[in-house]
Amino acid sequence: MPKHKTTKFKAKDSIYSKDHADYAVNFIECLSHTKGTWSGKPFKLLPWQEQIIRDLFGVIKPNGYRQFNTAYIEIPKKMGKSELAAAVALLLCCGDGEERAEVYGCAADRQQATIVFDVAADMVRMCPALNKRVKILASQKRIVFQPTNSFYQVLSAEAYSKHGFNIHGVVFDELHTQPNRKLFDVMTKGSGDARTQPLYFLITTAGTDTHSICYETHQKAKDILENRKIDPTFYPVIYGADEGDDWTDPKVWKKANPSLGVTVGIDKVKAACESAKQNPGEENSFRQLRLNQWVKQAIRWMPMEKWDSCSFSVNEDELEGRVCYGGLDLSSTTDITAFVLVFPPIDEDDKFVILPYFWLPEETLELRVKRDHVPYDIWERQGYIQTTEGNVVHYGYIESFIEKLGERFNIREIAFDRWGAVQMVQNLENMGFTVVPFGQGFKDMSPPTKELMKLTLEQKIAHGGHPILRWNMDNIFIRKIISFSYYCFSCSTATYLFTFFSKISCSSSKNCSTNSTTHFKIVISCIYYCFNFWDFCYISTYYFYYILIHFSSITNLYI
Image (cartoon, rainbow, N blue to C red; front, side):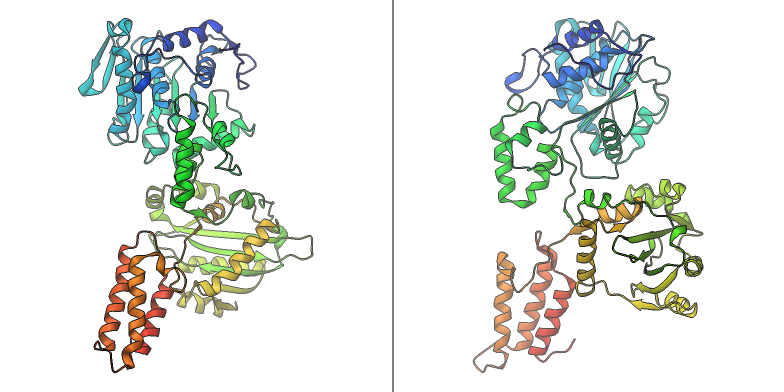
């Protein structure tokens, strides 16, 4: 490659050692590719791969050891991740000069972890110098470098020994598939303290779970790349399309895929793109796997960059005495109870200010963390969420809390969801609050959601960047409701349904041999069939009951 340009993350007192970097590059390039048309050919590092290797192994601290001990590499599929991970694992195990080095390959399950192991084992078999010195224990998924008694061992999140590791290197393949953070924490938090220069090599494609350990690490990498955080031990690399990029543009494909045209042909990416255009359900998969974008499996309602742009500071004390309106959403056991105050603007330059409050039962907090993979415990320590005693939400505590808020702020009205709120509503009314019911259906929710979107886009709200409020907003997805009036003919089952609907009108006809009751039963059966078996259609409860009531009146039946 051309003269190496040292990473901007090199510390001031560190140096770039060309000898160390050359050694690492030469070791890897003595290995061979193991699959497909590349099988048996020398492992010639691609420019982006060589840049990573030279930075990781060539940037040295004043004490002579490597500066970086964590590398986060996020890149689309088919870019050569597994081969690079296997090569790094062998370098740490066999070529790093560490006596009795412990190198582990980690993944979500044993099968996934085996992918990198199998590549590494084949690399050993194809390299005479290593093959003479390495013992491959295939049944144990273990590679032993006999001169130093070092080993490379496969671990998975399904089964692993929790402590006792003395780690020199860890290779995490597809970090985004980790079901929780347990294995990651065990392998990276203190397990390498006894080693002089351990390396945690994390390589992955973007995922979908924004509450995972991978996304947490992704955010840290982004913060370092964009100079919001500084960590001289952390080396970040992210190849991917930006959120606002046109996912159908070949220039964007090239930006996100540094090995495009080498490990994967542009024709393959183009074919995948065309397929995604024709089938919208494939778009998110294309964005995630081909463009390395963090996407969810549904269409997010709120553009989060627009929401984040409204993170104007909110001073609770400055709002005392001001007119506001409250919204109350109750829960019972493991769900969040929320009470939100909204302060209308005083003048044209002012904004709608939002003050949210959240509660969870104390005894179910840990359960919620494990179940949802959401850091409620951290938010509780930070003061963003409160806990009430016991295993259910203590409504009396919340009533007292709202009463105290009423002493500080001029709460004109409190809107509430009718479900399970009868007693609290009565208690709040006895305290002097005006309490009004608010429906959760389309009729009641549509106008305010449109207004909220408008105010957000215009940056006329201020929410202070509250993390739970952001999480709630990030979890709102668009679900297409299939209206019988317009879209039913897209499904053959629905076509049958419409046929039965038309037959119901013959209930008054003397020529019809089938009575109306039979027709009605057929209709109901069809509706239930649609509920149970339409994989791509969603029918709202509203429409369901509408149909029942409408057609029961036609057939003179009563529900």
